[in-house]
Image (cartoon, rainbow, N blue to C red; front, side, top):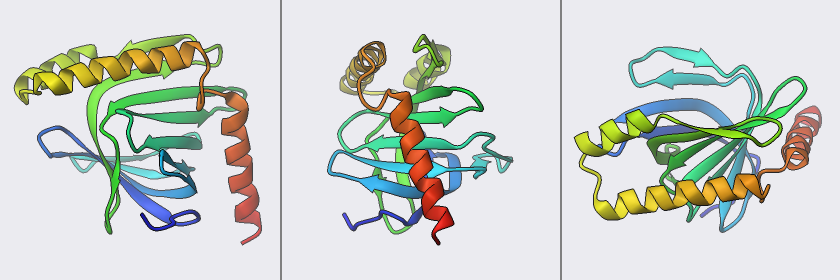
Length: 177
């Protein structure tokens, strides 16, 4: 994979049946390793599959993983850091965008690291409708449990200071342009 640090990417989220789910128009790559790509966005236009759009309210630092079936968004609120985690396929990058498949299950984490699993009903509906293979369902459930352990143990990237540091470095880079 080419070095993407400093470059802006579009992010495209799909569903298992290959239908487009959502597009983030622009995110800036701030770090890239063999394990993950980290992007930052601020007031980014998000376009839904039905054409409606909105702009992100808070800046965020997002980890997309090469071999994990989730991504982690560190959301920078006025006086706290929250996380939103998507159970999703590992990402791929082509000439068009960073792409992944969203599998509906999400975890919302607030400042004190308490969390809630979201969208179980949507996941159950889609796994039946789109006939997820049993191996895939097992991977998704296993990764959901692994993610919960990471949150409870505050394993990287679940560290408020790390999120703040990446965002601060991003802002300083903008000043120096």
